[in-house]
Length: 100
Image 1: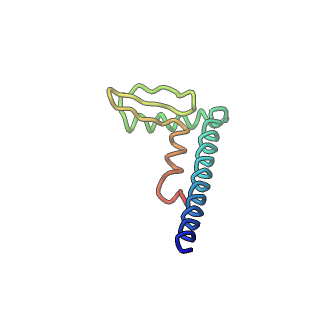
Image 2: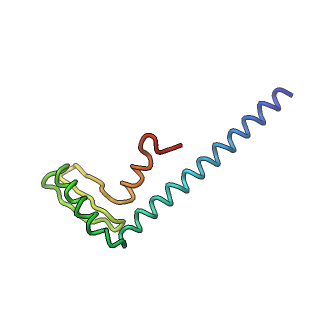
Image 3: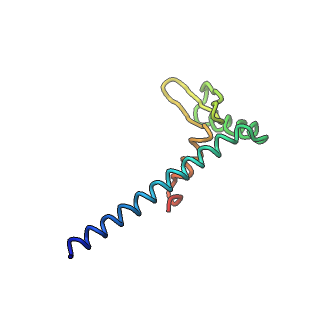
């Protein structure tokens, strides 16, 4: 009986973990999609301007290109700075304190 009870608790914990993981992945996908949608937002040019300033400060002299996902990528030699909107949004989502 104790073994059956332990197995039931373990299975319940696995189901809860699977549901939480599935929910977390759905949130990540929604955040990534919302970030990509900002490409069509009238504020996107202002966002790009701000990101260009960040890229210039962080990686002076870098080649800066616009990403099809929105945002920018800066590259100088082997150094690369990913300032694409989905990456920035996911970084923020995964920052300490963001995940329950």
